[in-house]
Amino acid sequence: MKYSVITFGCRVNQADSLAFEEELLRGGAESTSPDRADLIVVNTCSVTATADQGARQTIRRVARDNPSARIIVTGCYATRRPGDVAGLPNVAHVVPNDDKPHLVRLIVPSAAGVSTSDRYGDGDGACGAAIEPGVAGRTAFTLRVQTGCAEPCAYCIIPATRGRPRSVAMADVLGEIDRVSSAGFKEIALTGVHLGSYGRDLTPRSSLIELLHAIEAHVSKVRVKADTTSDVTFRISSLEPMDCTREIVDLVASSRRFAPHFHLPLQHASDRMLAAMRRPYSIAYYASLVGEIRARIPHASLGSDIIVGFPGERDEDADALVEYLERSPLTHVHVFPYSDRPGTAATAMKHKVPGAVIRERARRVRETGHALTRRFLDSQIDTVHDALTLEDGSLAVTGNYLKLRIPPGIVRNTRIRVRVLSHDRGELLAG
Image (tube, rainbow, N blue to C red; front, top):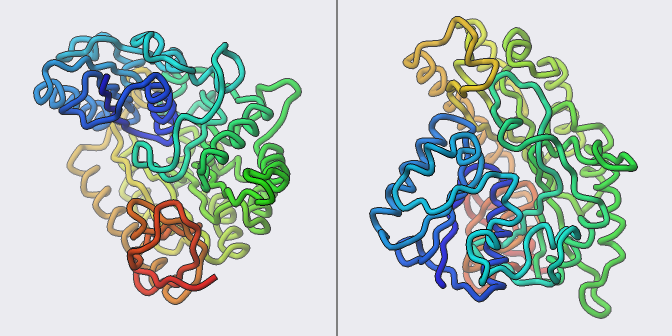
């Protein structure tokens, strides 16, 4: 059987899709392009109306290009609107998020080798590596350690599509790190729907910083091959600002195991809008946090998410957002024009912002974000970093998330030292 997996949205979806790929490969299936596949899994996002639309368009396109394929749809859009998804062409199954760990065995029993639940110790399958760097185009491994969210953000539908917070037991996380590092992965991205809530639901209660300390101690002791200490490093995915503690910043600053890369969603720089969005911090708190990170880790990458056009947003709120961004130490921003999500508190709010105004405000914030990125890239010229080669080996990613073209001749998944020559090019260094 030939299969293809198409993924939309967050790193949690990426982690879920990687698990599908592993299980299908273990069962003897072969990866191919969507136009040649017998089975196509579409892992959807529903964070915005645009995300929903993108999933629908993709499903219609692959059904048109490959009318004999069975299409399986999962993810947040499939969970939120299963009836709408089931009515799309060639959709054979709609699998909600809660059933993702069993997706492959549900739809292709003969191909199922080990489900994601088995890998985390609560199933009956065998463990072991079925993937290696390069499968699904991924050099780094995305490891989901948590899912679900209970935060009351007014604009967000994800608590309804992902359910209550659930953390993977620490011992199972460490076991999975051993498994994938033994398979050759040298970078692991730790991810969750609400990553900062890790451990609060476990018994005994734990925390993200305890997990990070445990990972550092464990990996430092593990030898993947005889007499060779593992050189795996970790990238911490998106953290809510209130969850990025001083202890986490200190750990990243002092340890070579964790990449100097933070993604801290701000959403807005007006306290009035933050309150309306039900975000539990102020702009002063956020500014202090990212300022401290920049002081402690001068070369750190600092990303953020921004929502423009939230109900009730005034011109002065939009101005305050741009003014803060211009003076902030952020290095890149993802801009989300507000769109209604049925079932969220924001849907019922008054004073909706006209679409044309939202688009203009989004353009302005994106321009500001581009300027922040250029400023950061300028500041990195002539700096030296550890990096990992990607693709065919002619692209490398640094710990602070610079992506640099380098001379060919080094294979994918190789640790290198590189000097930054320009915004997108690097020079290989010895040692």
